[in-house]
Image (cartoon, rainbow, N blue to C red):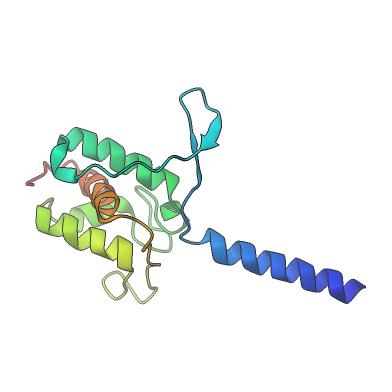
Length: 144
């Protein structure tokens, strides 16, 4: 009986661990602080909004994702701080696309040997908004 309970506990933990890394959040906070079902709307193309709007949207997406597991805004954790990334890359459309691809597909070798987990469930538009937010953190004006 103890072996069965241990097996069930291990299976549950394994399932939780596999689904929590890089997974989509299915609930979002509403204005009144309550959590409700997350309604996925069609992502707005980054070129249709102002830079300020894209930065705010990107900030929200980063806050709702698992980015904070490995990255901090100003301090190095497992990966570089978001501010370090902003300082390394010029705030151009090409670098927004480059970083969005790294967010979606993962990667390694630029900041060390530890690979970045892919987030292939993100849309390209959302990944670009996240990259725009990260690139904004050093105060550089966008050249989009």
